[in-house]
Length: 481
Figure 1: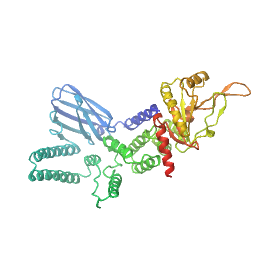
Figure 2: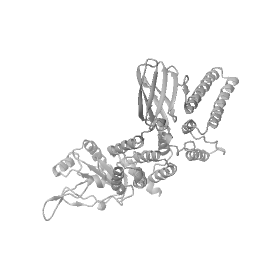
Figure 3: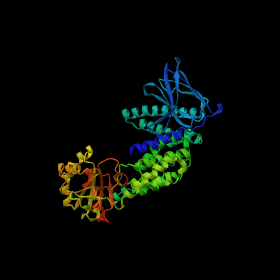
Figure 4: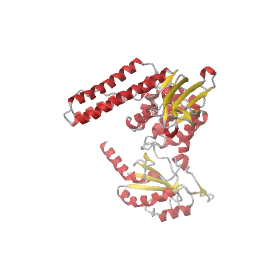
């Protein structure tokens, strides 16, 4: 379903960034730049959309003196922008007041920056210049202490570290209320306090790590203002969302849904809310981790269907269609009826297959990936059968000759082989009852389901090579229960 996710993404791009209304002169923008060492070229002004994408808002020609101007009559959404220069170089600027100018030099874009008419950018570059100077001194002191290895050099190095820390805290406090402070804080990690108990045993170590993890997670969003839509147009928000859900959230549908609800309870702005909903939802439609597609269903039901005013009718309709397919196929659900007959024309009742586990292999006889997987499955089957695991191989192609040829070619005879061909006893004509695409989410083949002894789904789209290990793990988990 990659085309589906891309469609929503493109829709959001248009919706979020294409609906700015034309403004009068007071809302127009004019950014004049002069960069020594740059001439007779083109530069671009773009804002961040996550850390790996930018949305271009304007282009400008650079004259022989390094001068250029971005200008327009359409208001720029506020946030962190970049000016893209030749040879992969770029310069970050803050867009709030959109009428300002600056001068710098290609030899040191930040160090030689001078800004006129933008307090935010004066703060932004002033902070970077001061920090760069302090870190350069720290670097020199570090080289000195490594060479001399004496107490005096070590003390000077630590004093400079403390000076940097004091400067940062003082500067942030003095300039609180500015967007630049929000930017800097947004990039900061939570500072975990020292663990207050002695570490003697392994249990003590485990308790310390648990404390550190819990503190870090619970304070992860402390420095990030989820109510400020400008932070959506920075590289930081996407990174924080991904880290929070990939590294700090238990990869279980209920846990993911709970954390998403907590975050979205704080995200009120229309654009950043849409962006947040999209980023979380799209991560779990075709997840890499088994069994978390329930989070996609939760997000789609609660935030797309449940908040239709945020989306167009086409998006809501497609979400409804997707949920209709996915919801009956979530882990723990009974495997839907699959109407098949075997090679002798007898009906196959999946629920009557005597096995502790059943692997359903849905394939197309002419699919190249299916033909690659088939010999591997045939080779695995004897070991699976010894563990009371049966395989039902179901062809989506209703051509009996192709189906039977595939069974013979890949030695599938020991398995249970089914096809959706049913003869009407009255007319003698073939009838078909199984909608593989909409009932079993078969948009590409092969598709593998693993069912427990009660024929409930415990895995979907499991790689062939992981079947045996997964079932062994599942068995152990059930024994523990």
